Image 1: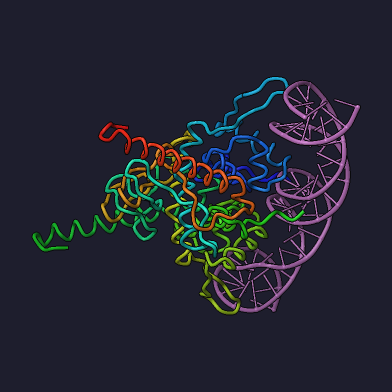
Image 2 (image 1 turned 180 degrees about the vertical axis):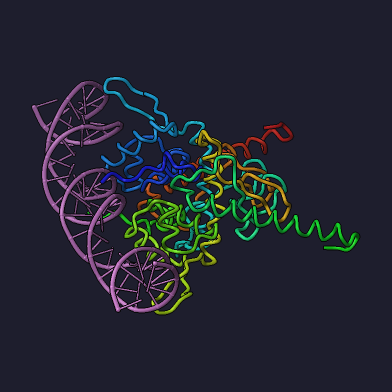
Amino acid sequence: MQRTSFARMQCSLARGLEVMGDWWTPLIVRDLFLGIEKFDELAEDLGISRNLLTRRLRTLIDNGIVEKRIYHRRPARYAYFLSEAGRDLVPAILALTAWGERWARPAEGSPLRFRHAVCGHEFEAEVCCSECRQTITADDVEALPGPGGAAKPGTMVIAVRLRERMIAEMLARTKTTKETENNEGEPT
Amino acid sequence: MQRTSFARMQCSLARGLEVMGDWWTPLIVRDLFLGIEKFDELAEDLGISRNLLTRRLRTLIDNGIVEKRIYHRRPARYAYFLSEAGRDLVPAILALTAWGERWARPAEGSPLRFRHAVCGHEFEAEVCCSECRQTITADDVEALPGPGGAAKPGTMVIAVRLRERMIAEMLARTKTTKETENNEGEPT
DNA sequence: TCAATCGGGTTCAATAAAGAAACCCATGCA
DNA sequence: TGCATGGGTTTCTTTATTGAACCCGATTGA
């Protein structure tokens, strides 16, 4: 049984997970971000078995997240580092790390802290709205149907649901609009 | 071979992944966030096999991410929903979704858009600094050794590296301080 | 009255992936 | 000559994932 791929799912989260969803992969990306670049150092730092590290690095390279550069010929020795797409994953990783800090911090305290070079402060990663810059919580987020809402796995039920909800809301709005037209000036 | 657990790792990311690192799990959490709450709807929306969905829901409940509520007795029927810790995962999920939008958007366009109820705009999730509110990129982040930097898998090499780097920086700073003391007023 | 359907699972066999440990190989170095 | 180093590959065993079939109490419809 081959594990079902998320690659064809009609969903950006699934496509992100296709790359980052594998066991170990986010930890590898984090280590590369922190400047660990040699195979043996990665294996030692994480305690991952070497054959699995080989496989993960290969798929990360295939997916355009990691690149390798030869730093010594004969025998060939490689340094691994993040591509542009890989570096763009770092903020998302920090967001999950911040969740771990809030809900599952190790008893001894966390081994890493982060400083924002721009402002100079130690910080927590927060997820914020691109429009108003305020911190986002689940309660503030409404989902809307997008342009590509097909009936494929990944959004089978959701797409239909959202469409129904939109129609219901639009009907309700039409109704209240009519009511306001009938008795004008009255606040809704 | 039992898959190595991340739970004992000295690292908040690993602890986040212990909960969210399983294949399918983030998609399940997203569906619960979007209001899908019944077993069959989850199975249909995602195309996940039913026994695996059973297992995932059980471990999510064990980890305090999901709760279930009985909505019909005899036969018992359950609705699943996110706990407080589960709802707090949503921003991190949105951050990864935003990465997928940037680097792996489906050709047909994304099936979902999100509106920030607070400001009323459609938005992209951005990861920002808790101190200065600016968007964070990998280039702006410096790692510092934290209070719990032990030599355990997950931060074996990193902890040592960071400590060395810190010491080197402090030595350099001491040196320049001495130099500045010797020829005062000269810019460094 | 009988059959079909629904919601929420469990069981089963087959296949894929994770894991530890051993092995390989060209070079550098003592 | 012998050992260490870096970067893997091979082999073999144990788990995980998968589709498909099955189960069970209630409800609905003919």
